[in-house]
Image 1 (cartoon, rainbow, N blue to C red):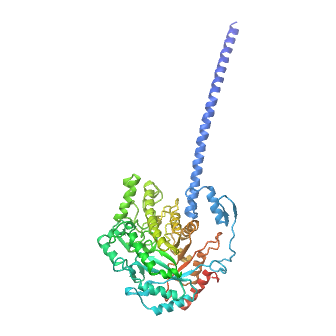
Image 2 (image 1 turned 30 degrees about the vertical axis):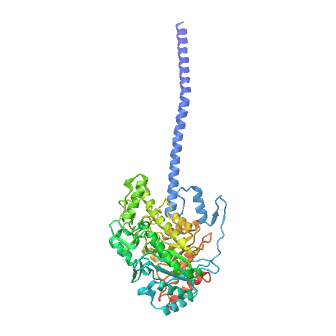
Image 3 (image 1 turned 90 degrees about the vertical axis):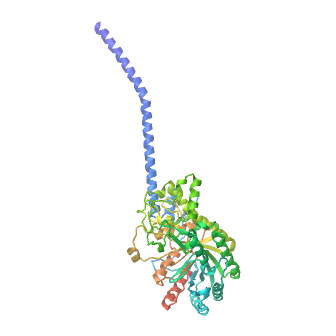
Length: 550
């Protein structure tokens, strides 16, 4: 009986325990499932972060080392499109893809058949050494003979710089165009077309220096802030600071009014040359050397290639503009030029601001670079808008030089100091091209400079990438629908040198058949007219015109 009683009692307790355990498992099961789901979500987030990190690294590598011009917020479709374009395929906006039509030209490095290729006009730049004192030609008859001789190479025309310091030399708004009138008449009589560069900068050619007008330099003696200034306070007298564009500091006129009056006088004086289409293009000078960029790589201030240069915004007018921009953003402390930006000959990795992970890619750095590049764009916008009114019906152009020697760094430091906000995660040239397109202006990109293999080996620098910068700028032009021309920066009449220029002017592997709109050869000289050199030059012109092989 006790056994039965005990047995039945033990059985009841066991049943109760089993029931409790079963209920506990039923409760724990949803909890465990919930925890499992949470862990899976965390793992999914980690995998997504890793995927995005890998994608970011791939895009950065393609931009930095592969020279792919990808959008800031690129996705896999942008990468596929860029790769397809490189492989010779065209990808439309809706994704339609087809093989592009490629020109059937035979190709080797310096032996190509250019017969039937696009016609690229060639212009020769006439140096201002043709003028003597008081803006008169040195030898009018000798100039005519030289023009006839150079025309025998079948060139299309001549490029001439109209130098501010030569025309408005003595007093404001007193213009002497007499020498240029005779020069333009000689060019017209030779039946050559004419491109003109309006030069609001100091002109330097060998031993010839034509400074800014004397009355401007006199103002600068009392108010040196009308010139670009570096962090050591050194003034650059090659051109006026863009800070005076709207400041009445030039004998009661602003910088913009001075530019407008000069260009208006030019248009009125040479109206007949516009009417008969002798003048076919006017290039507007927008900075030092006529180029739209800050004079941040100034040899007179100690810069040596391939230094990053210095920011040029320490004059009181640009300093005021920076402080106002910072105040308008609500961060008064940002109204300063970056610390740690190095000196003229620093490398990007030596300067705290420009090194990888430096302040250039943080909130303050982005604010400063947007303001700095914005001043450049605003200057170009203002001057070209005026020029577009004065020279309506005539093609306009602006010049930009290739600041390529830090292109393979993350910051592109030399481009940033020059005013182009172009780094590994930002396209700094598209805004420039959009501004030019707005005013129907083309781009003169300097240089498309051939460098031999031996020269590349002797001057090797892993940050240098002229081809990558050229590819980016040219594509920005063609995307914006504007023409691009170029010129040489060193004098040579070697056939290999000319062949490389032609190859760059007409890329054989471009599936969309892009090419330069014109080429400016610098300069007309006795060296060019030597018999052997002149024969090579004639052959070069024939290749550019599509009539010969290299």
